[in-house]
Image (tube, rainbow over the protein chains, first blue to last red):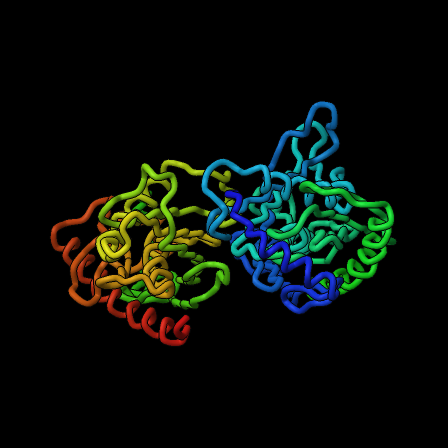
Amino acid sequence: MAIPLVPKILRSHLLELASKDERIDGRGRWEGRQTKLEVDILPRAEGSAKVTMGDTIVYAGVKFQLMTPYSDRPNEGGLMCSAEVRPVAGRNWEPGPPSAESIELGRVVDRGIRESGCIDVKSLCIIPGEKAWQVILDLFAISDDGNLFDAFALAAIAALKNAKVPCERFEVGQDHLLEVSSMPIMCSYHKVGNRFVYDASKKEELGGDERIHITLGEANHVHSLQKGLKGIFSADEFVEIMEKAKDTSKELRKLVNSVVGE
Amino acid sequence: MGGYGDIKMIDENGLRMDGRSATDVRPITIETGVVPVADGSCRMTWGTNDVIVAVYGPMEAHPRKIQRQDRAVLDVRYNMAPFSTTDRIRPGFNRRSREISKVTADALASVVLLEMYPRSKIRVEIEVICAEAGTRCVGLTAASVALADAGIPMTDMVVSVASGKINDVVVCDLNKEEDNYGEADLPMGVLPNTGEIVFLQMDGDLSPEQFQTAWDYNVNAAMEVHKIMIEALKNGGAK
């Protein structure tokens, strides 16, 4: 991603707004943008979701492939998660091999899903040592107006939850829904004007400092964390956003359940 | 072209497998402004095809060596999302998408008034979200709508349609099965105001008479599609 020129005026404006406890688009400090979740919208993908958070729009698609299990884990299938932010998503995203930013995006979302154990890789095994399913989750941004992390993570879990294993096409039994046993939810906080805010927009990302991503599972278990960009934060600040993440993830979990069904 | 002529794809009444007549085009929807951060954008569904196009610019051309002193450069990328087909596509450029990007850019450069923006760049990003058949035609047509949505001056919009041959019969707008098992494919880019052609490819086998029929089908279908494009742009409103 090309690094845009950030005028000092934007930074100082954000700082000034923060001193009055305001945000550039009028939201409250912990208030997210309006979020819309649609599932099962891509006929060629076995599972799919589209997330619209303000002007940020992303797709997630699940595909299945047959693989030979790794020799040290003959009873397990595989899970692969990759994120692509192509130049369609914004004027600063450039063509070419995946940028460090989009690799970080894919890996952080991947860790949250993998470590929550929501996909039981053992259940993906068809014949031990010979045949297993590889679940491939592709995240695709269409419009980047900030906080691609949360949008990707939300689309990812929703797409997995409506994914159908295409057994009939591969002649290994009957089609069935992919088993997803829990629901990891990511909440991201960005330091803007020397304080953390939830769900930063592109302008806040440009004029802000470090960001923190928290993935929480059922019963608020922590499954992945990531601190990104230059900046320093205190233990107290972290405790505060962790508490907020617990509430927000509960809301988002409700949203996914209302769309996908429990 | 698969060329498996033994699969029956037209019934006694001359109807195709999906119930269309030889000249019918699949259902089309067009929506503009679908990428809020872009200068112009368009989502076009055509049968099961689902294509999103974003236009950025005119903007500064980087690096400087790509700049042209007398006109803008048109940077077109066609790409298929990994989940857009039955078998997953590995991300990244391949020879097919490179070629389609190039011929699409050549077609669009014939209508966009590039001389109005010297030393700048206009980016056209074509993303196929769901593919059936004829994605290059949908991409090129949707790109014209997105350019118009971005307010970029053009002499005309390009409307692209493909006709082909199945069971030795010429039909318009091939669907997936017809494309896989058909005997010829003739994608064309038509300028609806003049009837001129800016994009032409072909593969397969057509007699001179069949070629003329396919050509006429394409031009007639393009006029129909053009109406839908105009309607979508009117409904999208001015930016």
